[in-house]
Length: 243
Image 1: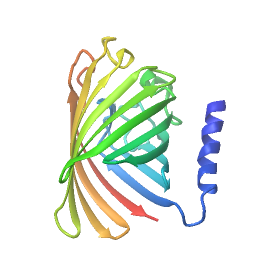
Image 2: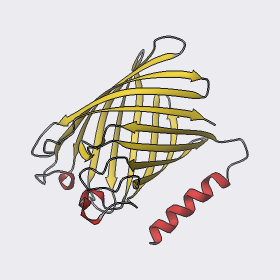
Image 3: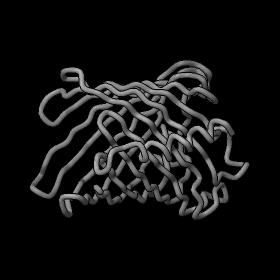
């Protein structure tokens, strides 16, 4: 209970202490054919995922939620927020490198009791580094450490591509591979976990509004660490607006 109160206070106070008109605010909502997280099929039915990011200087507060449009054969309640994540990030540049550290708070307010231990409330700390490789390409590495449930590491290495196709259209692509500590692994041993491939078309409807259409494919790198999941291919449509 104390952790929830602290999280709520930080969320409410962060925007209040910013000077007027100083923060950058981006709101978006995505609708996906399924909710896949770190290779796990959380919900194989459609979901809506709203988010708000508030940035000021080197600091960012992010809100992200998952609303279940489908109940995944009774696992979730339709229309409920089954997950709410709050992310606090500090980032800075160091030459060619973008560095970041932060905390993620995972809450599951609309979760039925039978949805499983993978959805227990928890907190993670993380650190990341990213740098451009060459024109249109960049690479990043991120390490997460769960403080409450898994108490182990989860790490990713990713390659990103971004190219402007025209004044209005942009194409983004990404490839990610993950490894994890023994608490994240089905066999209780450190190993490779999953991969994720994605491509996304972005249309700038106006200077403040983007429309997106994406498709993703994920799979296990080692079925002893992460057994094959029911959903591997999922699509997403979304809209984002700057305020």
